[in-house]
Length: 471
Image (cartoon, rainbow, N blue to C red; front, side):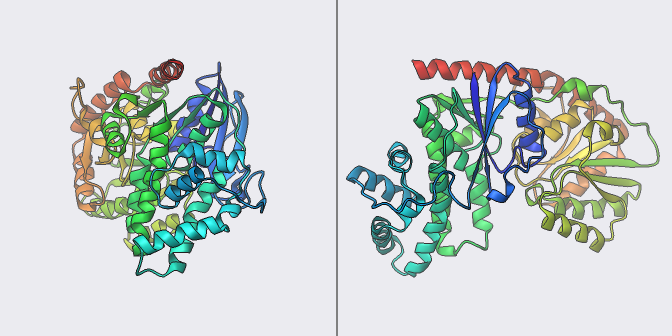
């Protein structure tokens, strides 16, 4: 089977998180061929891979949200649209619920370039009508440039050359979800969606806080990403999430409950389970294994550790992970100095297996997560974790359903350094309690989060997708 996996802004350009998950996922299925369809921000990222691709990756196709359109340079032909096509394009501009198959016909079969549409009279007329209806007190120029910048990346990817596959598997909604639906349309095969985090909600939170979006158009941008999510949810044969609560959110956004499944993440338990408990000495070592990026909220962790250090001078914090966002990483380093923290260090990218034995417990301060692999790896090594209450972290710490193993750490509200500090201090003070939580964590990982079980479940899901498609 040839599986086309579609990813935005992660594998193979970025290490950790979803990228590591994807790399291990492909390696675990050597019996299948994989095509990696990777969306990046601009063409300068093409070919700059952080991974050596597995042997069963038979093709990698890159598409950029900016720059020239792959295979298209702007045909400048005289664009002619029928009523059905006009309706679909108007719904697209309005961020409503367009007929995606009609849009694919316009930009694939009719060889229409983004420039053909965005410089056409059709576009100006649609925009003029919508501006009068919805933004009568807003400058038309502001509306024009907002909509154009919103649509251009989407139209670029809709013009992309589509790699052939037996099934398309997108690891998010958004632009990747549209490409999955495009692949399904082009070659008449099914596609499925797996969400690690809820992409639409993450984009909504970003837009609400964003300075680059004019206040008048925040709602429009939010509707745009909800429109993209509907393209994926409506067209997918199967929609999976990592945990039950995320599946409920998918249904709330618009996914058909009958299509939804939960498939938990899995880690290579045996690689971590033999790491011994760290010998007791005069320090308590805290590991933070994450990308240095705003979504991980390293600054809140630093504020919290500044409090911890005042009460527990023997505590040490080791922040390990790639610095993909150099500006944010620089801000974090400056904050470390500003707070006068002496016991924290940025380690850069590490081999987690080699360093996990040096940690007594781990901490994660994210403002958004799905089902974090770093927590599961910590658990497999018998290290409890202090997390924020995002994604399914609470379920990982306390268990859910038939999991009555006990507590494997602490879970606190996000963006609250004082609460995070108190949990870290409690973990530092009570070694016996910490070791007991570590034993619970290890059992939880062993029983519910093994990589081989996850792969088996996804293979079963592929079979079900084909069965549903053919029915």
